[in-house]
Image (cartoon, rainbow, N blue to C red):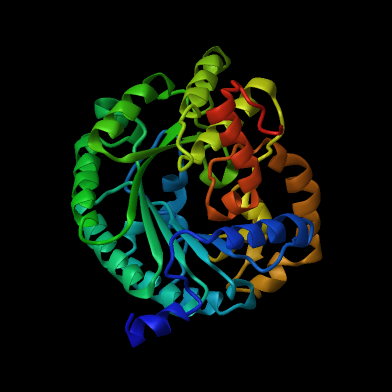
Length: 385
């Protein structure tokens, strides 16, 4: 190993993708016994909505209806906000929208975060894949930036159905072949630039009966497919949209599909545990048992600088007008977090992620699930067992 790599290894950012067993153990103890949910630490995970503008007109999300009316933070605005003490320990950033690739300065935003957030080790990008040329250009450049900086980078492309059914859901004629082109071109770039590529499907009443076909299509294309449940939230501006939530008549079909997804025997398919827990919640009405990185130490930063505890949180305040730290830890907001979110909404919130933080906290639960599933052949294991 040359001098440069030795120095780089000493940097705060880790070059290793998989932590050592003792690191898992230390973090598991820290997250379960040393952190307090009622008084969270400085945030480690940030979901950054760089824009609410979108070039699709989806029938399951209405952010595009108001996207152009929101004043987006400039690069300088974002730099000022990220200088706040609340963000000094961030390790994980999810870039979201709207459609992030509509920001002409997206790669500059990435460079800013890499420079500003010294603990940063993971960046994820959620995109609809359009426009194709700009998406490819940005991913190519961002992946190079991340690889040079020792940061893990992943891209998730939204695809909720196939052919004309996807066009219907996206509200854009001819959207499907364009998104498929983006995915296939990204796979080519992936051979040279290191990043993880996946497809994300939001399950709603529109596409539930077609999810098996999408799963087979992704298997044929050789791309990882992640499923999440459609949700109605004020922040998504979709409260008036019909057919998002799966109807009672199709609930059994959804539960069986999720249990089928949980049947994998590979220890590396940890999302199988998440799917199993989602099915349990739907079937038995049980409360959520999987951890949530927002509840642990996460936050959302809106395109205009508004801060939220999570996707179901009310607006806490604007970070361009007041310190993010003071907003996040304001007594009134912490009371809201503890009494309204934690005691109410959190218990019924579906686990649509199972990222590194959540996995590190729930690793013992996951290992117990995996052992019973693989070696004991136990069926329909309850997630709280």
